[in-house]
Image (cartoon, rainbow, N blue to C red; front, side, top):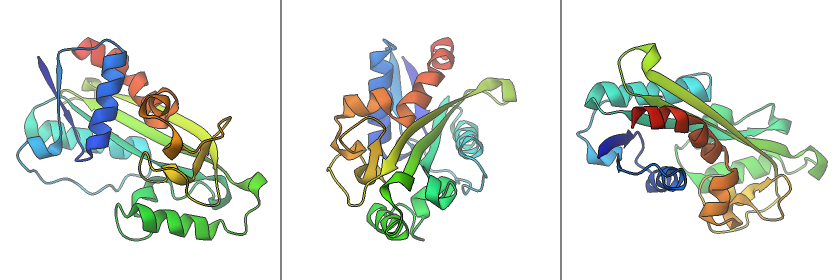
Length: 202
């Protein structure tokens, strides 16, 4: 059995990676979260891109524990807001992780934007670090295009899922089943892009 540290405390992210690994037939992996290892100082997310933040988080986790580590940084890029909130998505309202406040602020900022200009995309960078050098890392990037609806719909998912309508779908990300979301989502695509590196490691 191989231990793989997911540099997150969000159980939904661990469950998502578990579903991706299972779907790819990668067995024998024990997923650990940050709650399963001794605490260590986590550097603030100061990168200008999702990729920079994901690699930094994975490197911190590997350095502190010696375990292969996967970390992601993801967020919402809205066309009418010039790509914001972007890397600031989790703290758009000023309070980190306050999904309701972040979503309410976003909808308020887009209140006067017509439907045709409400395009957006979820973007995720997932990084794997399993050694001390640059060659001991890999990054997968995933994009999920869509648009922003005018009111939240659905009880699944997290973050901005209730207001994100994927291109070609009549349901928001929060109205999709976990399996449907994995197959299409930004994080699912980024994790899938990491599968060759994970296979090599495992």
